[in-house]
Amino acid sequence: MTLITFLVFTAFVALYSTWKLRRDKLNTNDGYFLGGRSLTGIVIAGSLLLTNISTEHLVGMNGSAYKNGAIIIAWEVTSALALVVAALYFAPRYLKMGLTTIPEFLEKRFDGLTRTLVALLLIISFVFTLLPIVLYTGALNIEAIFDISGMLHTSRENGIWITIIAVGGLGAIYAIFGGLKMVAYTDTINGFGLLVAGLLVPIMALISIGAGNPLEGITTVFENSPEKFNVVSKESGIGPGARSAILPFEVLFTGLIINQLYFWTMHQSIIQRVLGAVNLKEAQKGLLFTGLLKILVPLIIVLPGLIGFFYFGDSFYTDPDRVYPELVKKVLPPWLTGFFVAVMMGAILTTFNSALNSAATVFSLGIYKRYVNKEATEKRQVRIGKWTSAVLAIFAIVIAPFVANAPEGLYQLLQQLNGIFFIPMASVIIAGFLFPKVNAFGAKVGLTFGLLFYVLCYYVFTLELHFVHIWGIEFVLNILVMHLASTAKGKPSVFVIRDMGAVDLKPWKFTRPFSLFLVAFTIILYLLLGNV
Image 1 (cartoon, rainbow, N blue to C red):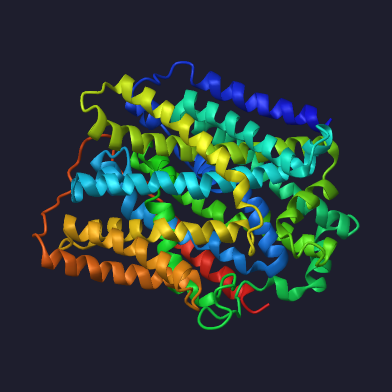
Image 2 (image 1 turned 45 degrees about the vertical axis):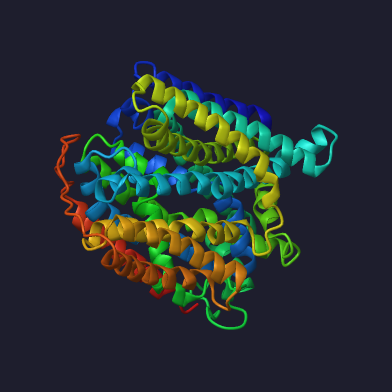
């Protein structure tokens, strides 16, 4: 029954998405890379949620919540603030410029070399951080629930390898043959499936714990370990122990907000959905609906971890990433387990597909067209994008098993590695919008400085600072270095955002009130749960 429900839901998603694409032209740049600029608010929100939420969240964040408590919630809740900024400031400007990629903006603002450097960093960050961790955490879940190694009479390590290859191969097929619109449709269906299935896990667990009453169940879980519900960490981000701290509260006001701004307003795999919007109104709807979902998502990726501590105690403290799969097996009946694993597979595939599609877009339009074949037709660029997806998928599959045994958990490892790339790129893009005195030379110096600064501080000199604090220091120094370098060489270039007429730029009339609601909701949540 588990296998049947898994296959039925997976087949439905594939067939429905293929049917929806039957009349689309996938051999043009807009058609393949931007979904024909036809995405609506609901599709954008569903796609953004699933592009972001994957097994590194379900497995990694629940594992962290199980071990360290609800302090990990900050990664999700503060996303709503960044999405407000994206809707109010960045989306109108991106759509006005008619962008296909974020590096394209850097060429308009600075020069072609800056665009190329950021494009290469994006591709490297996809291959060596996001894609392998998504595949590995997905394989952990599927292996734990389906017992692939037992079915094939092989070791657990081999079972995980086999699952990684199967999931990675299937994800590559989606990304290669369907383009962004296929990814967006599968994201939307799986996104709502994830909300339903993800909520069923804690609800059914609480019903069981409370003998039929979920409110009694949550009370029992809370009374078992009330300290784990506190969202404000008392860890120190400076001095001894800072490097192993999970998320000290003060980092929310330093590097965390820069990271969130980069991810939700500048990261190609996220913002590509916005660039594919049918108009500004739908783009803003999609971004703000996602902000609301991100505030509610901790019910799926934090609460189960706290419930896991009630069930399992500290028995998984040395391997917290096993808690979520074990909880799913414990509380869901076989037929629901199959549906859940299908949705889980969808979460893996959509994040994996999105990164592949974004990397293919950046390489084909920003590197191949510029340096290899300047006369390439759109059909040729799409073909190169497909080959890029295939090659990067193979690299990610090979690297995936090597991310096992992260000491603080896989989600923490992902964020630590992201710091190498995210903050330097965020500094350059923000400077491009806000600091007209920064020129192309300054941007390249800042990009190089940022990369070296984080690697040296965190990995070479191993400073007694939490890595998110290093992000904050790095951002400030990057801006200063870019200004100094720009003063030393060259003159600031005059940059004016021109309306390319790509889409209708009339804003959604509820953008501002909805934004105020999300900001207020975030603050109230911390006030309510900060003194538990």
